[in-house]
Amino acid sequence: MEQKLPYPRLEYLQALKLDHKTLTDDLAKMGKDRDYKPVFNPKSKEVLKNLNAEKRASLENEREEIKEQAKQEAYSPMKKAVNDDYDMGM
Image (cartoon, rainbow, N blue to C red; front, side):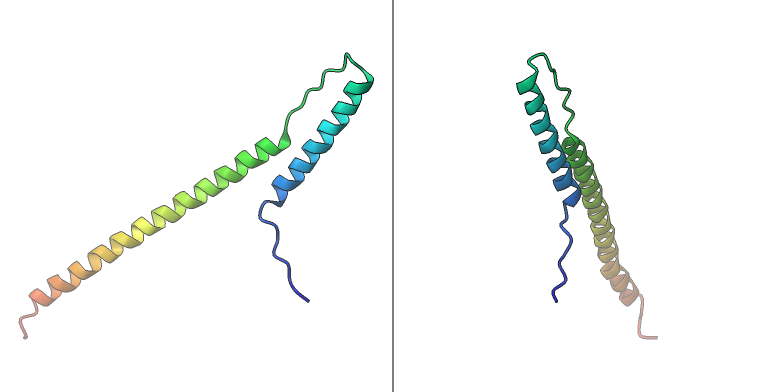
């Protein structure tokens, strides 16, 4: 049996479904009561903002790791060249 990978934005999808249900309910109430004023606060917007913040933080960490690795690689050839220059065959 195949193992299904988890949906990466499941939390966002669930928030969108909840927002949809809330809007549908509010529309039904508005149809029955003309004076009804819905106070809609989309949960999906907050969830998406959190997901984007996590992704941004992850990308920044990855960028820092790449910079650090590049610095280490830049110094490695220099060390080798310096050590070879002073090794006068003794």
